[in-house]
Image 1 (cartoon, rainbow, N blue to C red):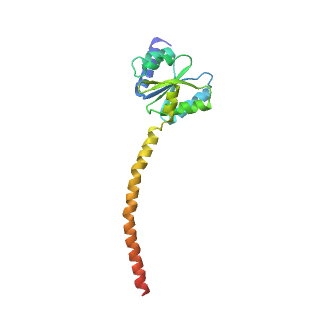
Image 2: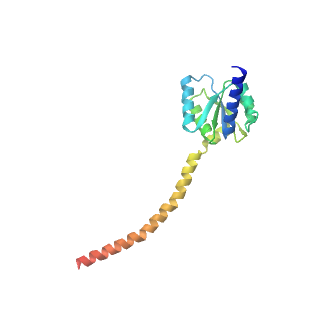
Image 3: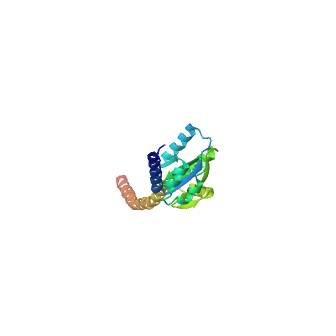
Length: 172
């Protein structure tokens, strides 16, 4: 890899850091290509991504970002999970690490705040943005449904009274 290629990699990784809200650093020693493909696919499904790059180039990319405090985590075979959603990358990484012991979570950062492995696990337990939006929407729709039911109840009662009155008139 020549100097210009290295500069391009540093620029691309720096851009990924700048576009992300949360970052999870992992060690992937011993993972097969199919396992890495599976992990990357799971990350893509939730809008996150997983990247492997040279540690030295990653440390250079971290220099001008909010995540510069995690530079010490890049030793050995390190991979980075990026996400604009605060919990998506952490959730996928933690769940995948439960089923595959070759993926080891080292730590990470959220909005520039450095997190250890317990911080990443706590972040993974939080609901995602989509889940929060769904809960908020259901909370907003519930009162509207109740109001519609209440508004329809008097009209239904009036219709039943008129129907009963009509049936009574026919019987007479």
